[in-house]
Image 1 (cartoon, helix red, strand yellow):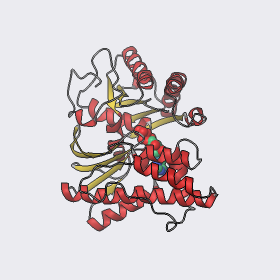
Image 2 (cartoon, rainbow, N blue to C red):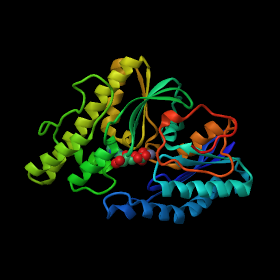
Image 3 (cartoon, rainbow, N blue to C red):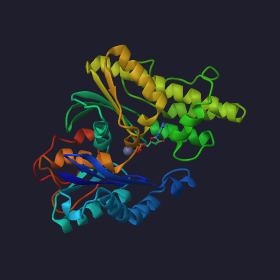
Image 4 (cartoon, rainbow, N blue to C red):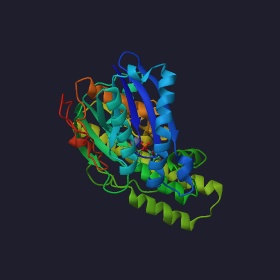
Length: 345
Ligand code: KG4
Ligand code: ZN
């Protein structure tokens, strides 16, 4: 079964073909980062317009790289939410029209389920049940994964998501958008011992998070120190260490309370090398296997949507005629694959 995957939930137009027999056979990704950079963040209307411009040519390119005629596709999967409403509608509208013309099934996929399953696109097999730490620009959540579509959110951020904290800190450090990779890069020159920032909500029981206070502490710190490259790097180091330590502490707790022996870490922030190293070390100390998506599938992409779609379409799940998108859509509302009658959302 060959599934065309389409991702347009935010500022990346992602397209890929997943073949049940061969895995990902072709993929294309267009990042709108340059469009949004001058505004310091994603401008929703610009994002939608850019998806409109890029999506059809990217689909053509992906099919040509795959050496496939569109009539060889068996189904189409697209991101139905959560994300920016206008951006989601571009992908949903295209996917439905494309599938309708080809008379093949189409299915709206949950973006965070795409992230959650992305580690399976790597070489390691990932068995369920597992604990998932989802860390992206809009979400920071612990999900207890009992099976495909059987998800319970057992902890989450009460305010900013981790990616958002990276992006806001990047701004305070005078770095561009998107901030996470740039903070990571600057932190490499930083000295760990110079500043110490709090590890939010680690001094009380529980596995929820809060990152907005940390960002405020970065703001205060930046107003007190010189603005040299070295000082900014030291602040980036202190911020990264605070976030990474917080995740290590909370992951240890979540693993111990759930008794789960596999930890999957996914979403844009899972691209962070410091975080990866610290969680791998935690896994070794607890005899827990820690799995990440291949780096190129940590941030938004079409491959994870094609794959998540495939995992449901192969059980017969598909959208009814007509579609809706769900800008807000908790992952815990998903159900295991359903053979028919499923509308996106
Ligand atoms: O999953 P993603 O691509 O999009 C959403 O679903 O939100 O995540 C994007 C977020 C951004 O906030 C970005 O700054 C962050 O992931 N990010 C990183 C790194 N790469 C991306 N944060 C820290 N270190 C990185 N290397
Ligand atoms: Zn994402």
